[in-house]
Image 1: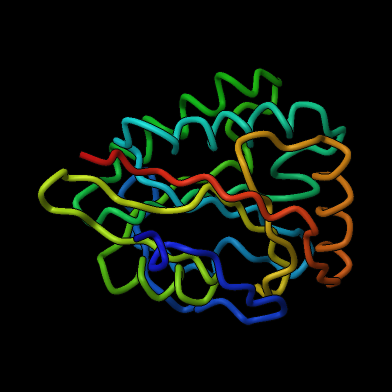
Image 2: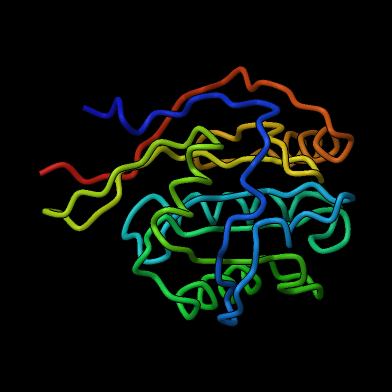
Length: 198
C-alpha cells in the first residue's frame, strides 16, 4: 500500500521558512536563508544514501538544468533537503560536490545547496510541500514518490515536477513563472516510487 507516500498538491502554500537545518558545511541555517525574495528555488527532497530512485531524480535535475540558459546562484537556487534524520552535513557535502561536477559549468556549486535536518523539520517541510514518505525499519529504506518542487522567491509552492526526466523548456518555464510569483498545476502526474518490496 503506497497511499501514504502520494503527493498532495499544495499550490501557493507557504513553506516553513523558519525551520532549522544544517548545511553541507555543518552551519545552522534556516529554510528562509535560501529565499532572497528575488530568485525562485527548485527543491528536491531525498536521502543521500538512497540505493535507488533518489539518485535518478538528482540526475534528472542536473541534466534538465544543464539545458536551461539560466545559472544557479544567479537566476535561481537549487536546494536538496534530506528526509533521513541520520544523515550528516558530510553526506550533504558529498551530494553537493557530485551535483556540481555533473552540472559541469564554471559556476560549479554556486547556488546549489544540500542540507540535513532532524525528523521534525524534515517532516514539516515535506508536509508543507505535500510530499508523503515513510521509513521502513525492516528494510532500512524510505518509501517516497519521485517529485521535485519549484517555489517562489518568497517561499510559496509554485509547481510540481514529476518523474525522473525533466524537460529543460518545462524547467525554464516553471522557473520563470515561479520567479514572477505565479503557481501552476502540472498535467502529467505519473508517479514513480522509491522503495524495494520484499
